[in-house]
Amino acid sequence: MAPVGPRSGDAIFSSIDRVNAELFTLTYGAIVRQLLTDLEDVDEVNKQLDQMGYNIGIRLIDEFLAKSGVSRCVDFKETAEMIAKVGFKMFLGVTASVSSWDADGTCCSIILEDNPLVDFVELPDTCQGLYYCNVLSGVIRGALEMVSMKTEVTWTRDALRGDDAYELQVKLLKQVAEEYPYKDDE
Amino acid sequence: MIGVGKMKLYSNVLDKPLSKGKQEVSLSAFAFLFSELVQYNQTQVDNIAELERRLEDAGYAVGARVLELLCNREKGNRRETRLLGILSFVHSTVWKVLFGKVADSLEKGTEHEDEYMISEKELLVNRFISSPKDMGTFNCGAFVAGIVKGVLDNAGFPAVVTAHFVPIEGQQRPRTTILIKFADEVNACPYLLLYFILFSSTKLSGNDLILTHVP
Picture 1 (tube, chains in turn red, orange):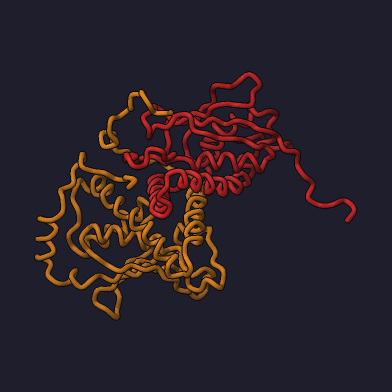
Picture 2 (spheres, rainbow over the protein chains, first blue to last red):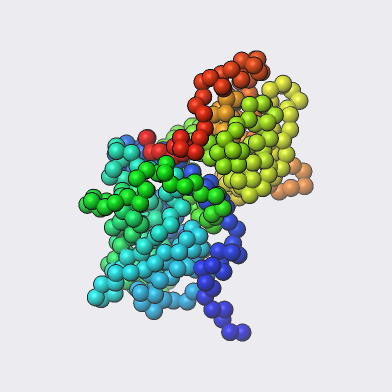
């Protein structure tokens, strides 16, 4: 039987269980609020959000690979397209776009016009250094690390701070060779 | 530095039109996020009661905002002022919007006058959660109990809300019951309550909603 080709983000999204985006948005808001109350320092909160995103990403990649049926990506360009078109659609129901590739194809920008995490949110003056959606950068970093790519993900545009969209810069640092976990002679 | 010198799309989040509430995200995205919430709180507490309280606090914030959002969107800025009204609002409207279906049942407690129970076969938040035996009767439904508490408190019906597992014969997973025990003043004088609601709470209108703000 021929292997099933990768399904599009829309097809997968309509076939999985879905939940109201507002519950998701408000729960995320509750998490950020708890972190701010506990940690008080905006940089600490950013780090904690990134760490939480990382924990989610390392598990999310399994579900992504299982549900989408994509085969191994040939290069980083394809990886970025997968994340933007299939990944974001599958989990958040929004499509992102990829742009601003650099010369050697290791650095790109993923742009989100629509972001369900930030509905109803406004940053007060006391939290101007906060990257509210930092969990997303952790998710991408964690997910890619589990498929042997070490990346650095940073925010270049953030609508909560006055820009017009959300832009993540994803930079491939290196491809880590997969380690065989067992010693051959044992 | 990002954000400097750029024109904001909307000068104020309050000017942005309210969404219709039809947008969806995948259940697994919510499940992952909820699991991180629970895991983070586990690192911050020493015992189960504290953990339940923190989850309830998180849910309380969600409930307060859900009440404002739904009153504005679904009810045309009218808020229930009667006990049964607010209970059926929680049982039907809130549950339908948040979890996609109305709650399984709403019952009045038999032992005490002011106790009510909302039951659900399997809470959405508990679907992918399993508790180890040493955590005893810990129920992540404390988050949902917090949501209900947030809705009731902000509607003027203070209550103590808790989540419990109720084992059912023939079913492997126990049913979850949200127990609502209203405070004494709820039964006191309905006219007094009406007085407080009319003269102490602010009127809801489309422009006055501040739904989420980071303190």
